[in-house]
Length: 476
Image (tube, rainbow, N blue to C red; front, side, top):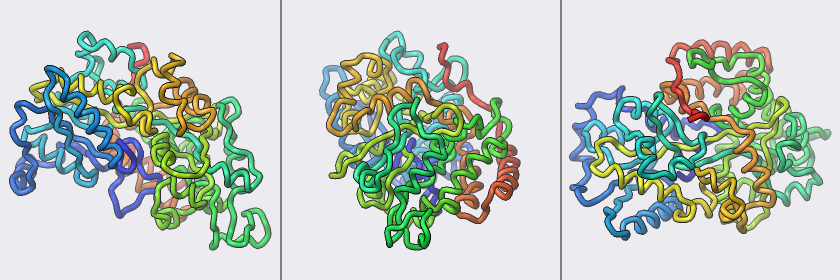
């Protein structure tokens, strides 16, 4: 799942022109079956006879399609295997197509699903319980606990891959500014104040002045130090947790984004834009109209807190880039583990082959998307075995000290993205994200006003909350 589009890489600042990935798959409960089935013939959604084929529904970039195709072709040529029929769907229409297929009882054999949808469909009995295949495929036991999400005590979905977050940066811009580069070890992670101070050193207006210098023109910034980490379930979430805060109560019945510790973090992110003037506002960021790799390469940004998946695009550029660990508010810098799920549907006639195909897609030795920098492996052995670790990290595209800056945080300093744990998470986040827009747009500024605003947001979100799933079980 490559970003964009991807179920694990939402755009940091919400744009009303395109739906967020959290809005892609809201499930089938809110739409009547008749309303969905009516357009089937005209839309061409019903699959052809697939008695000898394994259908795989997914979305992603051209690179991701090429990777999926390569694995599909290899799987299809092996003796006793069905032919895999990969179907790439644009993410803007993915929800409609999936809902239509489910309503018509014509689901694919295997499919990408977003976090909340996978848990809801699993609990509703529409998905194969991957845990049931551990005896047939013992390699499932090697998957990291962070990648297995329980919808009840015995049923679970597995992630497509692993993604975490760090500070990507243009090393040349830091050298030119004489600024220290982001630390690569969690023990040396910047405190938030250090992160802000460094962002000021690599922010320049058209006359080469920094924000703290006399005459700095915030209307003519040519290089911002960073982008605001506003994604509530990923980058912002990691910062909240590093400050001892959370978005939701442990039992999933209350939104607690109005806690004092959470208000401190949200205010600090807002201040990047409007107080320190080291980050673009949402309109400016949207006007850049390019991905992180191009923004770093062009000098529009010097650094940004973002996901591992950006390595795929960075690898295609011709400038020196690096990766550092997340900044912190409290004593420990934390990163967020994320990724959508790949699920087998109960109505598949070939569930065992579908699970086997999933394992081929999840194998870094068979799927090129790992060595190309889109995904991190799911299996423990690719982190604990030095040779296997080197097989996907000791490459021309991975920055120096990558194991320190990305592997160690994953294994020892990570938190789970909450979208698997929270029931009806699509519904909750589709209301939480716009609730925060007033802060990111600068309509609400300063800690007191932000605290008051977040109290109202928390009250509204709480009314939509209905508990939690068991989610990750480290003792399983």
